[in-house]
Length: 162
Image (cartoon, rainbow, N blue to C red; front, side, top):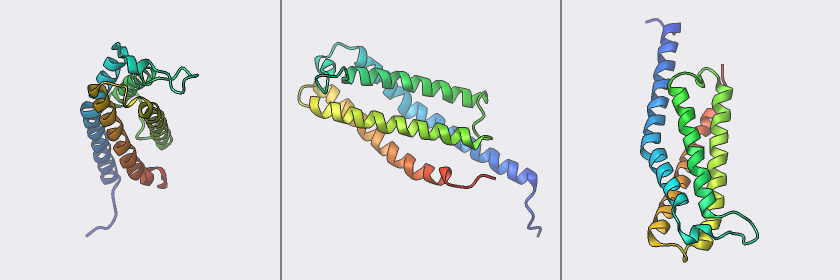
């Protein structure tokens, strides 16, 4: 039995890992990103009174703006994912780009979820039931995703690259 690992074995393992990442990313986009993006943009352009209430009152921050920003940011995220799928952006061979992308996405999700939770908590009793249900589910999924992401990428971000 030869205990040496060949270059081809390493390349094959790396290709399998990259394929798993791409499949996971595709499933995440299809199951979560696209539906939430469509509904975020739907509610942000729909005339709903509670979405227009600024909180804090002297600011111009409201749920309509937060939903619209989130919808367009996720469209950008999907565009970036398409570039990765098409291999126009090769994040797998550049661990620095991968780590920066992950950190930016995580910081954005944390910021958006905290701001949305603060604004939504002040509007909870004013808004319609369908909107309350959607925002609650949206924030719940986002917090679960953030916790899962932190746990999963902790190993990726702090492992040594060769």
